[in-house]
Image (cartoon, rainbow, N blue to C red):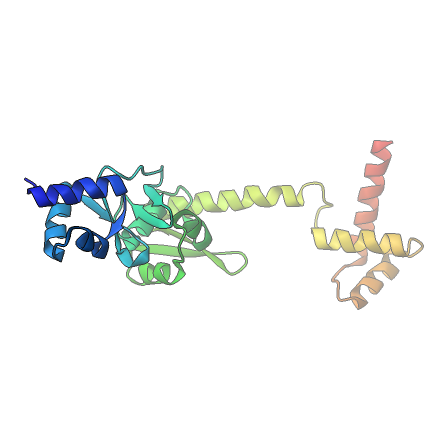
Length: 223
């Protein structure tokens, strides 16, 4: 049961929503332990940023679907500390999370902390294209399912980029060949390929021919 002084502290913090320990002590001219007792009796959360220096009462935060709540630039988590929050967010994500995806949610830098969580076996990671990694649940089965879904997402995202291109001709090759066709339309495929190779573009005569035939056919179909 709260004492009269503790009740005043709780009532004031509920109205103010968020405050530091120092502010609470100064506001009521009480010691650290008096504030701690009031907070423990009422239930409270500490911020996961600002070095856990801010407090709010249980029931004040309106946590979002990720269990996060922000008051101005102070952030709180249903899951407690930042390490515990990161582990929970990663475990809940259907396809794991990259560092940038995690930071977008928690709005604080976490790259170094994620590396430590991997070292401590609390999460695992898998490499992605472009020198990125995705963080997955530490449990083998859950992590495997997340990794499979992430690969499916990558495949789906890559599909539109290759749709509508000649088979075996990635977009950079197609762009280079079409540009060369505009600059030198009289060149045959062998000449065009040699010209492009001198510009450090790896293109074969067969690819030049394939691009030309592909877009010539598309032009006929439009007509």
